[in-house]
Structures are given as structure tokens and as C-alpha cells.
Amino acid sequence: MFRFLTSGESHGPGLTIIVEGIPAGVPLTEGYIAEQLARRQRGYGRGGRMKIETDFAEIRGGVRHGETLGSPVGMAIQNKDFANWQGAMDVGPVGPEVDQKENTRVVPGHADFPGALKYMAHDMRNVLERASARETAARVAAGAVARAFLDELGIKIHSRVVSVGSITAPDTPSSEIDWDVVEECDVRTDHPETAEAFRAAIDAAKADRTTIGGVFQVVAEGVPVGLGSHIQWDRKLDGMLAQAMMSINAVKGVEIGHGFTNTRRPGREVHDVVVPAPDDPRRFRQTSNEAGGIEGGMSNGNPIVVHVAIKPIATMTEPLPSVDINTGEVIEAPYHRSDICQVPPACVIGEAMMAQVLALTLLEKFGGDHISETRRNLDGYVASHQEFGQPASVPGGDDRSV
Image 1: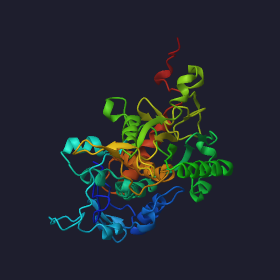
Image 2: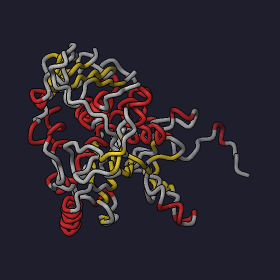
Image 3: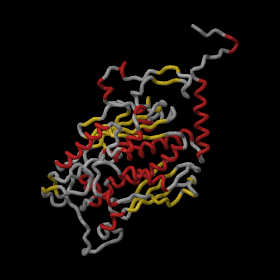
Image 4: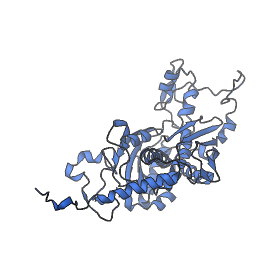
């Protein structure tokens, strides 16, 4: 079974990651993981924390001589900012002489309020430290391990920003996106005019002392048909992806393909027609991809396309009205150092979560204790599709037409 766990707080000593279920023989290095972590730290509208941290995941187990062993992969990421929080974030008990940087003021839109009541936390720091998006660095490290596995099976994941505030990029099919240009752009688009408009919207939000959200797109190419299942609700691939994306900090909406847009169009315009295609490994192909590569909870062999809506960050330089959780006093919400716009870096986090789900469903279907076994099982499965779309051979020449 594939899964991952993370541990750690935003200003604590660091983050710990355990990834379980990756087969043996998958090439994996700290440098490969570092490339993904660096992608998460880039982006227009990022805050001051990125000037402090240079994220690096030290592999503590599960890898030898540049290849996975089949045992859990353990990693640790140091929080450099912990040097500024010693005492306040020490693991051991501290005395009253230590500034514990207590925070009792609620930030509207953050995890503070429900978390404080749920966990009986009179100091918001007990909640906000773990609820911080700093935890997503651990997810990207875990996603890099899953991504290394997907690389071996020819599956690639990309992402781009679709909108920032009310500014929307052209609705370009994923096959026509120049992903190399996207990767070099600080607002993750291959459309220059849109990039300028995105930056202007972020600048305007900063000048207005607020934050701004948007929508990003994650695309997986090379995914075989048949991942997930229609059999039970919790095995549907689109449901699994939606849950994974919704778990990202500040995400409030997910659609597969053109899910929301298609509700405003007639059926004849939204369903992907299947036609024979002898050159396709599936023996068939769809003439469009409105479904975003998933039908009936299963991948259909087309690129998987997910759109994710992320709200503006809760912490603002001009705070909203709030309350003190202990006294009930009406006060101003606190300001914590944060981004103005997190849509560009959220793209990379979305890729990581996509990689986790695909790794899970691939191993569920094809198994394998070594990557060569997984690859062999996948190749055999793809080859079995060749019997479809062929004229039926009738024993004895019987005429079965009606």
C-alpha cells in the first residue's frame, strides 16, 4: 500500500516525511527532490519566508546508492527560521522567563478558531503552527518520491495558473501548452500578456494591503486507462484526486476537466465521442477531453486535467476585525508574515498531490516489489488491449448476424 505521512510545525526544528510503498529499484537522489522543493519556493507574490528558507530534504532511509530499497523512504527538512523561534518553539518545557510568542487572536478564514475549540488550545500557536502552509514543503518532498516512480512508467505531470483574481488565461488545450515556458514564468503561464496581467493583479492586491486567490490546473500525461474503479465510492479516481487537492491549504473548489463549465452546456457538447484508432494503444480514442481524462471514476487514457480553486490567504497586512479567544474582546486580527498570492506555488503542491494519488492507484492495479515487476505488469496490461476493436472470429464459420 502506498501512503505518506508528515510531521512538524512551521517554526519548529523542521519537517519529517515518511513515504511507504514505493517499489525497490526506483532511481532517487536528494538532488532530484531538491529540484521539486525549489519549484515550490518560486513565484510572483511570495512572502519573506522564502528569503529565509532554502529547502533541502535529507534522505534518512529507504534509499541506497541512488535507488529505493522497497522499505519506507524517510526524509527531514530543516526549518532555518527555527533559529529565530528557539524558546517559543522548544520541544521541552520552558519557564515564564521565555517569550513564548503566545497568540490569542483569531485570524478570520484560518484554522485558528475551530482548531482552538477542538483541541482546547488557549494559545493559537498550537494550531496555526501545524495549519501553516509550511507543511506543504513536506508534501512536495513526498510527491517527488512518487514522481520518481511515475517517471519510470512514462507518466509526466505539469501545472499552470489559470486565473488570478478576475484575470483569466486563455482556455488552451493542455496539448498546446508550452510547458517549458510555463516553468520559466514566475506566474506559471505561457501567455505573455496574461503574465503581465497576473502580476498587475498581485501588485494591486499588495498595494491595497490584501491578498488574492485564483485557479490553477494540474495535468497528468501518459496515464494508462483503468486506474481507479466504479465499484465503490472511495475507489473512484476523480474522488481521490478531489480529496487530495481539497486537502491543500486554502483550496475551496476542485473540478475535473471542464466540470463546472459543462453544467451550462447541452449534453451533445460535453461528452467525449469514442472512435476506432488502430494506432492508439487502447485501439480507440476520444475526439475531445471534456471529461478531463476520467469517466465513471476511472482513467480513460486521456490526459487527466484537474482545476483547483484556491482562496486568498487569510493573513493580510490590513487585518480584519477579530476576537481574543480567551477573553472574547473584540480586537484586530494579528498579521503573520505571508504571501500576497499563493496560486503559482500551489501549482507545484497540486502536482505533488496528483503524483501521490497516481502512485497509489498504479500500485493498487499493477503491484510489484521491484519497479521492473510493476513495469512488466503495466506493459502486459496495455498489450492486452490489442484484442479489442478486432473483427470477431467465429468458430466453425457460424453466422451470428441478426
